[in-house]
Amino acid sequence: MESWGQYGIINLVDCDPYTIKDEDTILSWGLELIDSLEMTAYGDPFIKRFALHDPKVAGYTYFQAIETSNISAHFAEITNTAFLTIFSCKNYNVNKAIEVCYKFFNCKSHFIKNLNMMTDGDIIDI
Image 1 (cartoon, rainbow, N blue to C red):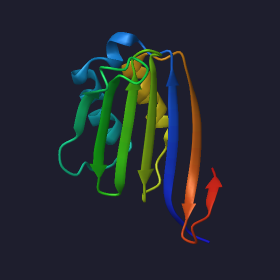
Image 2: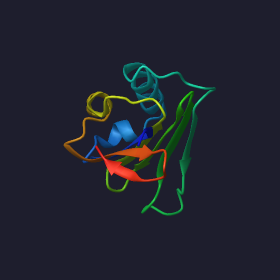
Image 3: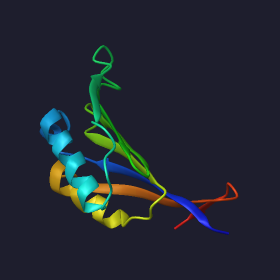
Image 4: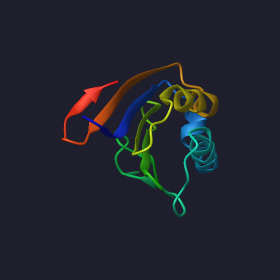
């Protein structure tokens, strides 16, 4: 069975709180991430700081359409954690994505789940 796409789920733990609260840092991270994965952005990114009324979920959300699908992230300010997903019909090196994340957000550790989405609908760990 053929792979239809790659889905990377990356949680960044104990990020530098300044970096995940800074819109310019997040936008620069997105540009470098796309470049390092050799992807092409489609349109401008969406970025918005949400849920300021609820500290449990407050933080920036980032979304970027790419020619082969999308990249999304939410930056949880109260825990200094970032939740990132990269879905692409083009295979990519998830380790490069993690390197860019460490560079911009100075996180202490991460968790990752890297999956292949198969043409028959199955999901397989990479």
